[in-house]
Length: 113
Figure 1: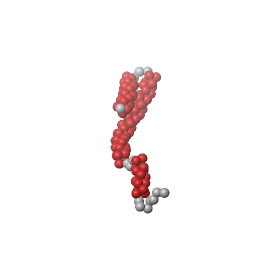
Figure 2: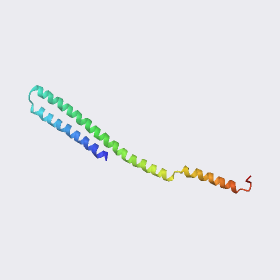
Figure 3: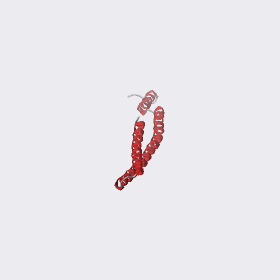
Figure 4: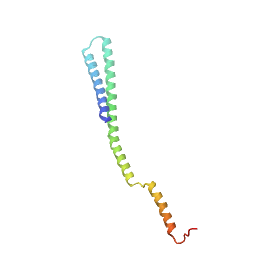
């Protein structure tokens, strides 16, 4: 449930950086005053850096989810299997003591006082 929302948010962020990059690129191509051209170059570099980091973050999150999904399913099925075959000591130990008492009571050596 979280995965699509998170990946969509990162895709929107990447699209915003791409739009900024394209706008700065078109402004730099058209030319203009030197100050505007320097601002356009700075915006172009910032948008390019933002796109790079956004793409890297998107890839990292997809990789983490690709590993985490199957790992959690394996953990769940393993825990379910363990609970199915695990011994319930809350019932076993009292049963063992009850059987031991019954055996002691029914032996020939035991004589009540």
